[in-house]
Image 1 (spheres, each protein chain N blue to C red):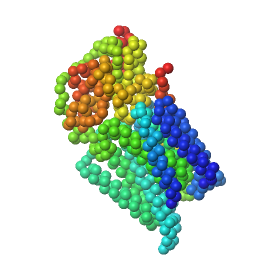
Image 2 (image 1 turned 90 degrees about the horizontal axis):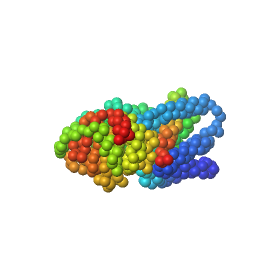
Image 3 (image 1 turned 30 degrees about the horizontal axis):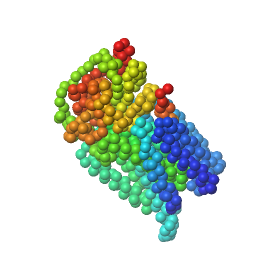
Length: 481
Length: 91
């Protein structure tokens, strides 16, 4: 690598780091994304082959035509996906793009590995240093294949689960043991291949390993409930990052190592932050089969009081004459496409001098930050969105708390009921405010299948019906009052 | 084995953790989507293996890898930008 190119790659690495850094503040986030994209473009211009020559300096061949066509097809798929997806389906789109990246990482590693496997070996020759390096490179390729392909199949399952196909966790006795065995076989094959990359059976063993890894991705995600998909997507995102980094090792591309590693480590931290927000260790999310047998019966105990319905006109009066109103949005708001009606209502209240804020639970919706994206789409200014830790201490000074399609994230069972599966999870203290209005379609349990104690509290009123229709009724009633 | 690459790898792990440690949860989705786009750099891996592909099978698999990688990188950046352009302060 010439020193000019080395400097450019250093610059590209800095652009990636700055891009991620800027992405973590609302003011600079959009620039951050563009900075990272610029880094990507520059890295493409100085792309080097393994032998150190620029990929663009060779004569044109059919392969280059394929590269251009493939890139354009990918660009079209990406653009259609990115611009046609509804804001509510954003998590699925990220899962899908992530899966494609994982698939690409697995294919790249496979092609490199099979190419190496066919390289002629001179029997009996001992070249210790070279052998070591080969094992390291082979190990990187195998790692990228394994992680990339399980990220591919796992992301597809996560996508389907978020689309509403087999949302429920699929479990059977001994599942964790079976998955563990599959993983052991995969790791065994990887171990064999690492040191026998040129063995006659290497290609067969490799194909078996590849298929098992694809299957393992499915087996790993199937038992996990739809509510936990954000954690799974974040984890698979960091997996793909690591696979890309391993590919970078294998084909000696520093930009790929840096970019992949940054994604791998930041994605792992993000996964842990999400689990922390749900107060569950990551192992419990991945292997606990949350929401299955045990959780379904739990939570019914300790429910006291009755459900008290309320009409929209009455709610409108409460809202119009309140001083401080807090809205707690949840996935139900997204399903009902009610975010624009919410914004209209809060603007109407704002005109009357009511202080309106949104309380955002870190895992509300199907993805962390999902509510922020939806509300931003509806033009709610982000300084009205308050995070759980900031708003909870002042919840007892709130006149009306409007819970729209949120359930588990406001369930006081997390504080009160030790037998509840969500016991200990941080929640928004909606039960602390003077009057809590819960907007809900019916009395069905939430995503985790747990009875909500909030609905039975003395200060809670239920406004049944479609969230969007109810909100429009509220807007009209507030305007009239 | 080039130990410099390992050195960079280890440092990048810590940088990755450090730069996002203060991210507010409201930006988790765009951040996940943005980092998702960054690992789309795998497109380069696809380009490199396809450039060297010598058998029809290698060409076919490399072609698929390039399509996947390209969709990941372009789609990823575009979808992130679409999310972020909606984050506006009150006028």
